[in-house]
Length: 268
Ligand SMILES: Nc1ncnc2c1ncn2[C@@H]1O[C@H](COP(=O)(O)OP(=O)(O)OP(=O)(O)O)[C@@H](O)[C@H]1O
Ligand SMILES: [Mg+2]
Image (cartoon, rainbow, N blue to C red; front, top):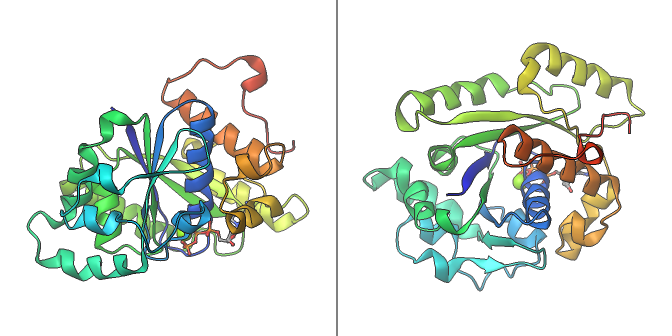
């Protein structure tokens, strides 16, 4: 049964979608069959993987219970990576869900029908803590929280952790925090190092060892509709996300790593 990881932070532009696409693609390259669920009406994960935003059924239908997921899931150019796409009308689900019974459990119910087909299901959340994100946290086994290496990095994190606690206390007791992922790290900026130190002091082992560096290839890959691994396999972005995938596999005892595969430290 696949492990479900929600990528969440209600702060905008911190690297959620970049992480969802590229972590998913790296699990795929490492031969773990992965489904990426686009749970954001902005549909950036859908378009970033080159999927037509208008043709497909997707997360909206899954949340409102009127689609067979296998009709909605589409494959991508990245090996072993499928997508449950989003469209802009997903924003309407936020309101339509309110009147539904078991409204927080709709995505979980839908994903349960395909969990056995995948090793990982990654959910790209929107920058909000609304009902669709709550559905994502209820469907998830763990939440991965990207935090950008910049001023106000920790802003809003308390609110997110509080929401996670509320979900754990009633809706999904087994929800775990997979970790905090530092993103867009720029070696040239002293501030970036200060943020890394601050976040590590605050959250200790909860912070992933892998840090995602700022890398222009990561920024441009979505405009080609490609994951970083298909766009430029030798880029720093590819190396960072492969390390993240391996770190998560290692944490979940899903792999034994050889010495060369061990996590590359920040300075590399
Ligand atoms: N490591 C990186 N290096 C360079 N650019 C990056 C990196 N990570 C993300 N970006 C760019 O930063 C912008 C925001 O990233 P992304 O869309 O992944 O954030 P997000 O948290 O999903 O945003 P939103 O909250 O709007 O959903 C995008 O233009 C993306 O291409
Ligand atoms: Mg996004």
